[in-house]
Image (cartoon, rainbow over all chains, first blue to last red; front, side, top):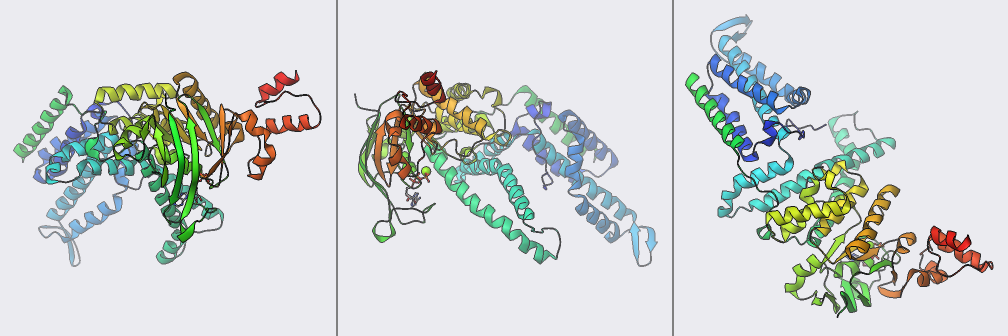
Length: 262
Length: 286
Ligand SMILES: Nc1ncnc2c1ncn2[C@@H]1O[C@H](COP(=O)(O)OP(=O)(O)OP(=O)(O)O)[C@@H](O)[C@H]1O
Ligand SMILES: [Mg+2]
């Protein structure tokens, strides 16, 4: 359904679901950077074991994960051949003027691995963290920047509202597209210019309705006493538990192991 | 004691923006005069319906009740607080909640309970108190089991109940409903109307229900009729519906059952006055 290389929240009660969003976001960042510190086989084994265990623990359907991986297939494909053919080194196989080198093969595989890891780890975060927790975690992590006058709470509010309206707008786009198709509109054939032009009858009504929605939403928020985010309190408080401490230690352990293994 | 809502000679002129729908009463200089001197009092606990043709000023009047709009002339008092005093705005918005027509465009959060918490969070209440109010409000509309649901998984009627819970969580004395059922299917309409009636009867919440449906208006104790920015009728439904010809001239049809009763009376059938529901009719005939 979503065309993004990250997943939509899958409700559940796994260990990963129960972790504090701040811990999960921190761990995600670490896991996205860690592959660059890995060079030897054992480092990859340790990292892979960790990620596979996390995927299994999350209880996220593997099919859903594979679907998000599929969205980066063409990028991975391109990257693979780019690295394969352009890395100089000791040749394995020569096809006329281009040669596949040992270094090229290793670099290509490593790149694919990093990309898949990136997507998997990011999806794991979005699969196991509800939009509220995600924005709440982001808000908490960015809150030091409030001193630098960054309107963090307002930004979190905007993000929440955006997430709230994604499915609504998606539904509306589908509805209008169907209505236009029923009148003979064609969104599939013709050159890119023609196709882009055919999308106009979908996006014009969407924009018009989005502005009306925004206006009504603003009125409804006023009616519910919304003023600046500085007056607000929150129902949900983030609290770190023993599970969060354990997870943090494990991730730190992983980092040390990988660095030690080289 | 003063009435809960007091409106004195209220006039409102929209600055000359493009109106959302045609049919405006244009004054000089392209301005739109939406309210032309409305006087009204509503007591705590009343159930009042407000009807009138499109563009007659119903929504504009409603928006004066919680200081979303401030009078161009005249005054509005809510529980003795004048809405045009800047320091009364937040108290007034706490006392009068609002539920609008489109359920999709008034839900701000990605789950039911977070959305209901929005009002109390704006009031700056402590977390425990917010949680308590959210649970109470969800229980009052029968949605406790749906607290974790994302709004897009609810029916239109349920979304509108979320909006009602959102208003309730601020613990208001009054809720203004601006055509809350006009985008709903019959099931959703029933759910919402039953909830409104129950909140009025059991929780003593003052209700102002703006509607285009005469059958909904018949639920109220008192019906107000607006035309072109003025209040033209005010009375119990039975009395207001007696003036069928006048209502029809405003483009308002009687509820079918009232219409039938009046036709039968015109034919000489000795029906009592004030038949408003099918049940009344059954009682009168059998
Ligand atoms: N934001 C606005 N800017 C300018 N004019 C407006 C605005 N909103 C409403 N009006 C005008 O004010 C008048 C009263 O409108 P209002 O929305 O109060 O009517 P209503 O009785 O609620 O109608 P409906 O039954 O269609 O909801 C109309 O003439 C309308 O065109
Ligand atoms: Mg209106």
